[in-house]
Image 1: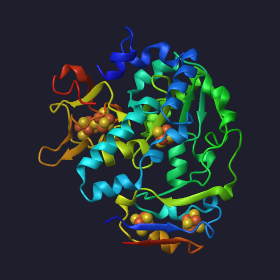
Image 2: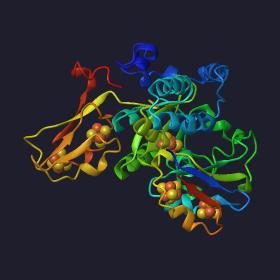
Image 3: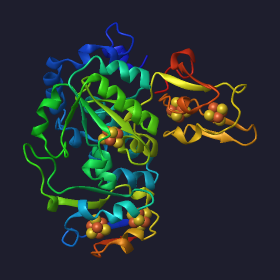
Length: 278
Length: 78
Ligand code: SF4
Ligand code: SF4
Ligand code: SF4
Ligand code: SF4
Ligand code: SF4
């Protein structure tokens, strides 16, 4: 159980299945808490890149690990209170879609910042909840507009993005208020980059890990390109796929491409040494 | 040592329309943002967008961005 389930699941199987974490009345409360912490409750301001400065990169560069650890902790504290993500497998996301309304397709802030992607090519982000009614408050954050979706449309679009190879991540906007389903990939998602490149935990791993059955794996390598987290590689020695279970984020993307059904998602909690690897 | 990257925003006046440097950089070192930060109830004018170095630790100083820039706005040095 991750700390978010400990704090916010309230009897539900996982914290993100608890409708209270999407509740309208919580939105305002949590937003004020986030603002009290010094972060504007605007998603872009709370985003990773705004917090990660050249000072941090310089400290890493000169191997000043004490300063690095301190800055890392500061950034994580703000992120966890205001805006962080947890990777979730597709089945779980599709269940979330039935909990919360409205749901809307919006443009992706990371890809705008990384690539200057034009709005019409950039509808990969999904916003949820009453915040979507207030999008006009931040026209720049929602450049390109907000397209409201029925639950079925949302499921179809998310499933397509999963098929395309994008990882599903649930994001808080004032923890524990969950209001985003991001569809991310390396290197254009700054949340994945901050997490992998700098070891700053913007993204929490999901509740599963992917396990390969070596008997079934025939070494076709169809799965290898699916991993956005550098957890999946190919072993020429064994002619099989290889997953680093301590690095796996449990997104499940590798599984859907395996013609042998050789990979399965197993609950992290089943492995004592992985139970607290987030 | 981290490279120094400067982008002259007097020369780079509409990065969202150009974005050549963003696309050419092999490691996504550069980012586009705004000078003014997010503003309530107001779309930010394209002229307020700027390009800047962000992920300096991934810059190889290949100078591809410098060479691709039609406005000669970028300088990269180590
Ligand atoms: S976290 Fe993912 S979908 Fe969300 S803004 Fe970043 S890349 Fe886009
Ligand atoms: S190994 Fe599979 S489940 Fe694990 S992070 Fe990579 S693609 Fe996702
Ligand atoms: S797709 Fe399946 S069978 Fe092919 S290498 Fe990956 S795990 Fe093995
Ligand atoms: S010099 Fe090369 S690596 Fe550095 S920012 Fe420019 S294009 Fe990117
Ligand atoms: S290539 Fe030059 S003009 Fe074009 S966006 Fe980059 S810095 Fe601006």
